[in-house]
Image 1 (cartoon, rainbow, N blue to C red):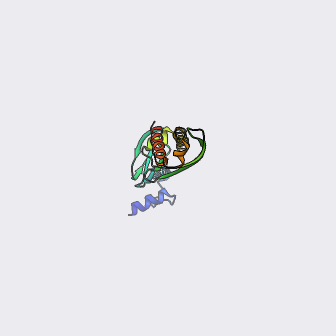
Image 2: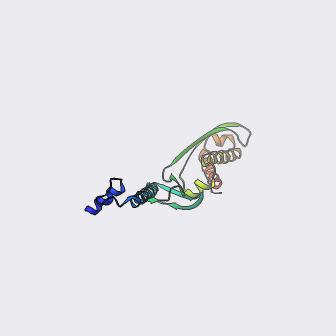
Image 3: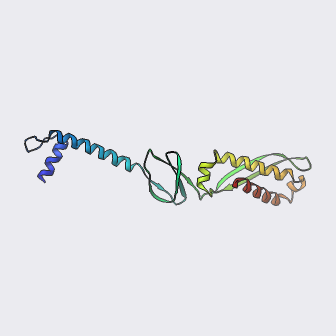
Amino acid sequence: LKQLNDRLRGLFGGGSSNGGKGGSGSSMGIVGLVIAVVILLWGASGIYQVNEQERGVVLRLGMFHEVVGPGLQWNPPLIDDVIIENVTNLRPHRTSGRMLTKDLNLVEVSISVQYRISDIQNFVLKVDNPERSLREATDSSLRQVIGATDMDAVLTDGRAAIATEARVRLQELMEV
């Protein structure tokens, strides 16, 4: 214990009981301690948690590295960047607009879309702005379906068929 106490005093500039023979060794010890603390803090800052509903995309030096699942994770800070998204919740999107029907009548149509992220890598990396892409694809598929349908069907009993066809077209557009 006396030797440990002497070493700790030597590291923190308190001198030693052996006559002060630890001058340059104690400064090297301080530098080593500082380096060890910096490395420990750097390593600890890379620890993060991914919740059960989330997935993470790891970018190593800006390039795709892997998709991580739920749990406690570690990635080297300043080398890896992690983008975490919730993949289980339903995300709503609502749009409306005036459109021409097949018989050249103007109708106002609104649609509500709910979606989940099925491929986190594509959602994060392959599409610049996923929400804007969804809005444009929804408008396009809805306009295509309404443009091929008579006004009577749009306003009455054809609504279910329009919704189904718009859903199929939207799904096709979003999978491309």
